[in-house]
Image 1 (tube, rainbow, N blue to C red):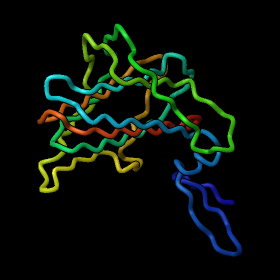
Image 2: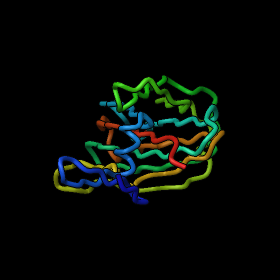
Image 3: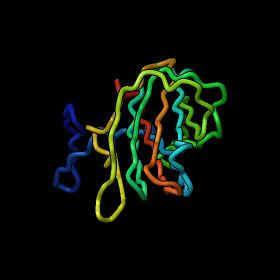
Length: 175
């Protein structure tokens, strides 16, 4: 087996294949996934997702994917002011044979009084199919989250009754 900085090269019956670092984390049991579908997000009531690393003792890589039915603004904030975490979103190990768990916590619909420091913004949509997507689960869509921190992802649609599908992938032990 040959290790590369962007993955691992392995042999299968005389043939070699390269596995991405993210896929390797999945095989090692250090990759977790969560998803939510909300069918009625409105302009005046943006959808919030909270990622809490306050119980984590190492940097964590996250990749999020959002698909919406209308033009939407996606923002990520660090150090928000939260008075209620909202409803818990379960994070499942992507290696179903692994017993490893994560200390990262994820919530939907937290009570946010101050968004915090904006670290990312993107306008999605304006396409003829009226579907918007961010995060093709590629490395360039990843964020390295600091320990002992809270982050929010804010989804603000341009029309009421917007469908929002949120998926979060968490990769640990990436040092």
